[in-house]
Structure formats: C-alpha cells, structure tokens
Amino acid sequence: MSAPERIPPRSVTPLDLLTEGELTVRGRIREASNAALLCTVAHEGREASCVYKPIAGERPLWDFPDGTLAEREVAAYAVSEATGWGLVPPTVLRDGPYGEGMCQLWIDVVPGAELLALVDREEPEPGWKAIAFAEVDEGRTALLVHADDARLRRLAVLDAVINNADRKGGHLLPAADERLYGIDHGVTFHVENKLRTLLWGWAGETLTGEAVEVLKGLRAALGPEGPLTATLGSLITPAEIDATRARVEALLTSGTHPEPSGEWPAIPWPPV
Image 1 (cartoon, helix red, strand yellow):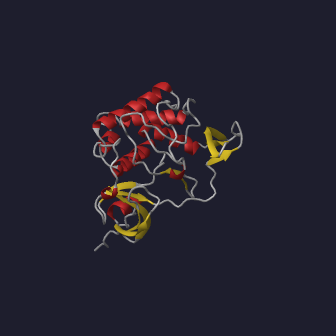
Image 2 (cartoon, helix red, strand yellow):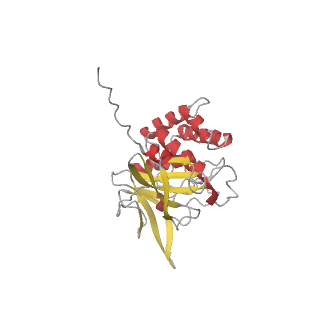
Image 3 (tube, helix red, strand yellow):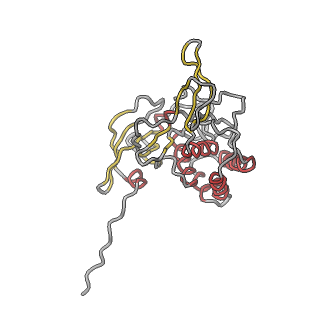
C-alpha cells in the first residue's frame, strides 16, 4: 500500500490574510479625517498589521455623492495591479468589527527618504522637479520640489488615470525594499477632472515608453469584456468606468503627462 500523497501547505498571501484573517483592532489613527483603525490580521499562522476603514465611519462628501471611499480605495488598488507597477498596498473590501470597510496592508516607512523639499532657489537642482512656489514665512517664499524619481513618475501616471483629487506628500510611503507606495485613494474616479497632486514636475513632458505600454494594457483591460472592467463594476459606477477609459485614451492620444487646468487649485491643501 502506497503512502498517501503529501500536499504542501498553501502559501498565505497578503490578500489571503486581509480577506480571510481575523481582524483585531489595536487603536485609532487620529490624523485621519475619517475613521481609520490600526489592526492586526491573522490567518493560518501568519499575522500582519493593516489599516481598516469602516464605511460606517465615512463622512459624506457633497462632491463625491456616488459610492464610498472604501470602494474607491479598492478600485485604485485594482487599477494599480493592472498596471503591473504595484503602487498601492494590497487592499480588499471586507466585513470587520464595525461593518464592511476597506482593509489595507500596513507599510513600514523608511525614514529619511528624500522625496519632497523646500529650497531657496528659482530653479530646482539636477535630480529634482519643480512643483510651485510656496509661502513659508511672512513675505518669504521657497520653491517646492519633488524628486525626479521613476517611482514617483509611475505614480503620477496612475493618479492621472484614477483622477486622484488628493495626492499629498504624506500619502507617499517609501518602503524598505526600495518600493514606493501611494495610499489614501478615497477621492478618485470622479467623472469630472479633479486631479490635485504634488507630482506636477513632469507636466507637459512626454510619457515614458514604459508608461505608454502600461496605458495600452489598461485600455485593453478596460474594454467591454475586459477583466479590469469586471472588477471595477462592483466598486464604482458605469459612468466612472467610462471616464477612466476616456482618461487612458486621452493620455495615449496626447502622449504627455497632464498639466493643471487652471480651473481649480492644482495642489492639495495642506500639501503634506
């Protein structure tokens, strides 16, 4: 009689942890404008820290009347995954101690990463891109700059696709593996152009070849029968999906990073 076949243990992925794990609230993130809870999630012997944002703790937004912040956060993760760039931490929609909400893997930030700076110069130094002049003291201004970093440039493309209305400096998370993540994507996917970001340094510049190929992939994935269309269909409205398609097409047609429209403040406040 032969021995029974040994089945190797299943590898638990971050998405498995977030989706199936037991969620335990450890505290509240007080800086957040909506309810954001620091939690641990445990499943099959693995444990990780995460952020849980229950829909019940969201404040209504008059200019984002459709859907929820949590659904848009998960939608942003779906688009990020479709790019292949992995710019948004693993994010799921699940039930929790305070009802359904967004659950996102916690990212430990590497201190000292220089992505933004204020400089007393008229033009940025090599390796930096100008954003705008900012008043730092009464009667004194400084130039706000961000790093000329390929990771930030990819994030600028993602923000243009998802129409991010709130890309602040505090939403940039440099991790130990040299990856860069973006978080807080609750105000995205609006049908009107609401792009508000600190990452204007490439405005009007030609998109990289890599970005063009990624956008072509998104165009295919957002087709009527595309996998991304199917995923987004349960998270945002049909009109918002159509607007996302239109933004991808506009980027491919122009071949350049978008520029501020001049119709509203282009930089979020506070910027960090």
